[in-house]
Length: 385
Ligand SMILES: [Zn+2]
Image 1 (cartoon, rainbow, N blue to C red):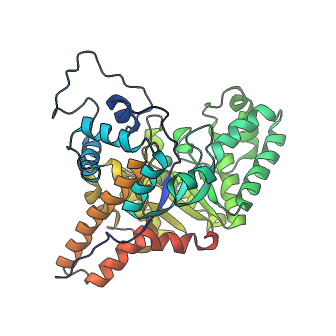
Image 2 (cartoon, helix red, strand yellow):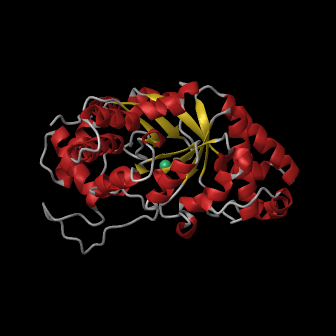
Image 3 (spheres, helix red, strand yellow):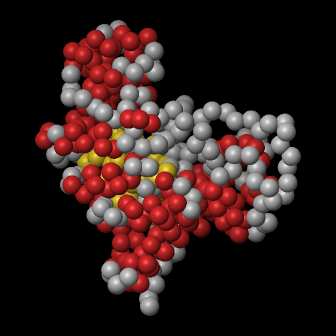
């Protein structure tokens, strides 16, 4: 039976973050912390006794897989200590190390969310560091936070906020806007209500982390309108994220009323992280709404051995042309690297099972693999390439 191979297929990552070189080599503890989604600093207790094969505190399956796979690339023993030492030695020439990892994974482009880390990194610098094409996503929340200190009235805020988004969307490298409202007031977005937003503006002025739900809902509606007018893509964080997410209101189903609204029928919406762990909800929404897409970032690679299960689950409902590759890599280039390799390895297994089950032939399966890795990106984002 002919098998699918994704090894030589290049990848475009539709959701990841820029990063910079660490000024000093990482300790094992620092490296583990860089791999963690937790925003709460975790300190290893004094009672921890190290052991060569004993898992380091906080290490979970995805980190274990990273260590195991990276030890082959680095040609060292598959232990966390050896991997950290070997990567630190190569990372002394950080640009070369980063470019080697990107080249090994055939990662040729990233749609980068410059909203993290803050202060914002420079697009050209990041492109030079990794040797890949970098497109930019303009996040709305930092704009809101900055304008709140500069605009005395809601009227002034509203005008300058819209102008900022409009100007950003006109830049050739900016492919869309992004909101992390799931981290603030949740995804249950109400109708646009300007007067309620105006009433809540003082609360937001006083505290940029205030819930101010009507105000935040207003801001995402404006972003949706501007994306529609510019024919660019609205990215919305869905599902789990770092430790701050409003988990009870983070599932994509909360978005459905807004997404079904007739005025957004032509708006391209990209559900970032595919709603993990509610991936079937995102897949269902992408299957019923023609302009809604999803990516598999974060669930891949952070679900570790679960990536294979998740890919099979996503395609229970999602059309093949609605799902794009992503990683949500955010601190070290090894994340970008393992994201591609783990995805390819898991999706090959899924696709080969579909061939074995006589659901499709090898040629169709190969095509589907390529759609997720880069072809769907080229179709959805074709105007801005
Ligand atoms: Zn992200």
